Length: 297
Image (cartoon, rainbow, N blue to C red; front, side, top):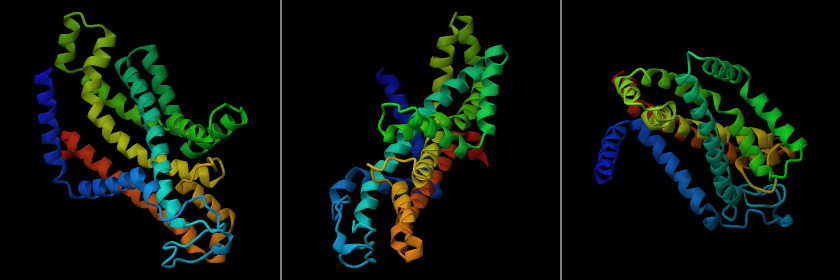
């Protein structure tokens, strides 16, 4: 156990040494870590209660009192932005966990049993979900879940809708890697000593593709955050939680652009853009570090 931990530690150090030479990756990691810090401590450093209504301060532009102005109910925009970082990141993280679990499992089975009926069926399912436009499918799924009156908070319905509909890209990547790994010599050796399909898939193939799954997960978190913003913007989000998507929904519901209240909709839009950019740069850098073929280019 000690030897294995030493090897993991050595490999992690080696990966970090390669990663930190990637300038774009370091910029992306810095942006991501800043937002993670805000997500953890945001609710404790907000200058005002983000939900407190102050009708004497409605539609105030940015000032020394309210750095990013106030909304239609007099709520401080900066406080909502800081508070909403946690909600948006949590939705992105939990939805990505669902997508990664589904995509990895289906991709593993589709790749390992590629020559069988099961493999062909799973490949067709993956292709089906890849062909269908992601956003309309997600909207339909979220709407159906709400109409079914499932006894879950809207917060979790949004997460499940994003996670259930966003796994196909991961499945395609995992399937491709599984097709490659299962032909390697150490897999043949495992078969020769009597290892079953379960052991080969989950004890030999899965550990070899996990680094690429991790890189894919970082990219998927950014997509999930955009998906949450899209669902909230069209009214399918959870109004009891302040997220960047709900801030955009309120801004356009109360015609902030027509009022010239740019401070209402630009900050959450920029926050989404910057965080997704950070996640994307980090994900692509990880992909280059963990994929030797990309590193050679």
